[in-house]
Image (cartoon, rainbow, N blue to C red):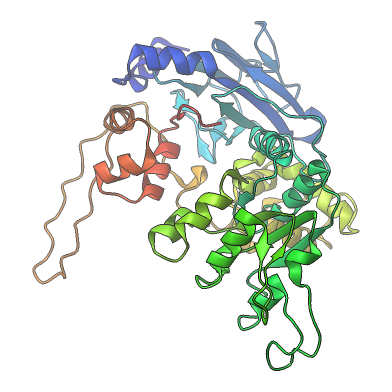
Length: 472
């Protein structure tokens, strides 16, 4: 790298972060680069705190050799920036270029965010970083909770810890991330003698949900021609998985809380309680903390359910496994192995937001049934190539190594504008980093400081590739 690139790298790394915090983060960071395309080069490589060069030649001990005709001898280099607590990548004037999350690299460095998609020539790799020790327990079934991404290894570790306890578990995550599979593995590892009973709260009848959960006596209501034990008694000595727990009415929540806390239920039509031995695993795609704040979910029930909380990351945070899952789903659906992908097509798949998660991958496989190999970018379904969120790394602006431009002047709100606030400029990386440190890395407190939504703070963390202490 020339002197200009070194100066630029030094410039982008300047923050007001304390030396002690930097040293702590440096000692905890673990990073790796996993080549995911083409399949013949699939492999994972540790990325250390020095310099890691990518190219057809490996000169240093930490270099990564990529034997591919589109790769230059010295193609790109990844360097650790101790001040910023992050890795940065720079292209070394390669013949076929480099990009990060679809944004081309010049001969100036760019910080890498966790799950960044790196393209060098026609080789695609996923960068992952974490700031906590990695523990991936062998007792958790890899078929039930598949994947090798750091994020899913953390999930397996959480499942192993929670399974042996008797308390309730809250599994949270977007639709289609595999929450029911996690409930099944929690039940298997718990070694409870009873069955696993699955109930979707949104599918239970609104007028009969109490009797469906807790049972009823004959004649308890119109149409109750026979006694019913209910789901809790059916799950006695086992596990009751309540999916979409956020859909449960406020009126029923106190009864569910009593059943979880004391093991007592009262069937409809009787005044006598019945003891049950049931472990509850609940799942939701909602933010229950926000539901509590909005008065739509009981605080005491949320506290009881979340003694163990397992957050399942969406596919866009597990990009290391995406192409492998595509092949696996194709085989399961009877399509056979998925057609070969061009580098451009694979890059689109890796960069997509996947709001439908695993269901979206199934949809893609079905739509590619008649596609012949190799699949070009043009052959992909139109919905896949369309950007789906401004918060994805591919849609964010490239982080420039040049000094941050002066804030854009904010126009005054027009008279009679209904009191709407004018658009506010984004803080500089240094200002944002200092605010995070001053507020103890609390997303909520930092959001209050900038008078922004918490989701916006998370987007800024992604944009500036900031590694939050304690986050893997």
